[in-house]
Image (cartoon, rainbow, N blue to C red):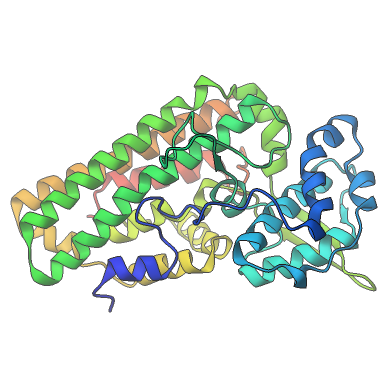
Length: 374
């Protein structure tokens, strides 16, 4: 049983100010030995536009990933190779696309070292894909931009950066839940109440930021030009030199963020619909392993819900905090409907980038939250 949750979070890579975002700040380039990878990331949008991704990627020299010198550089390499690999797969007309050896071998080596699959996941597309553009420490829209994109469009940049800001804002909610859990052991109801207020305010900010998505990311541009590159891998062949392996992986998805799974587990919100709960469990495998460890530990049992039930005032503020999580999920469902379901001109059966039937999955997650953990 964890008693010092603040220490446990820091020990597992959660920053008090930036939450699950990669810190120290993501590397913006690799060492000179890996310069061809950085150059490829720079030219990727034009290669996609002129249809030469596979040809140009195939020309890149083979680089030994064992020469990567730091965790930060490893994350940068994973980011670049994940974008390159996704572009190769999703611009291929082949039913079973082939990723060449010079990309496959280092990509899979790095993915194994990081404990994540060789596919573009939330950890790379968002958590490791940002830099500050100003001197201030705040990570917020207007002060951040992505490191790698497929299109260079403002729409794609805004899509990633809205998500980065939400991850940053979630840091307050994460820290508050951790403190509230600690206060249950000392039975400090007043401090728990204060932390529930922090959770409510932080999630409200997250929802406000999510509502800004449409300011600079057009739904039709997202659906036609960005979403395809975030989609799942199906029967993708990885050339390992002398042998080829064929694998399928889920594409990048908000479900791969540890934020809501952490808040659910910490607040005692349970998702019982079999397909949705199984999918969320599988998404833990796409997170940085330390983040997944935190969620799994919390899912073993949080005392917060039961403690709050014991006092009417605490129950009131607990319910208010959970309502904000429900509101966030409601807004997420609206955006998913506008950006994906409506663009596909269908109400049901649309598959999200992560590979789920989108409408039913998001509805089940939202409706389970509304139950306030009862």
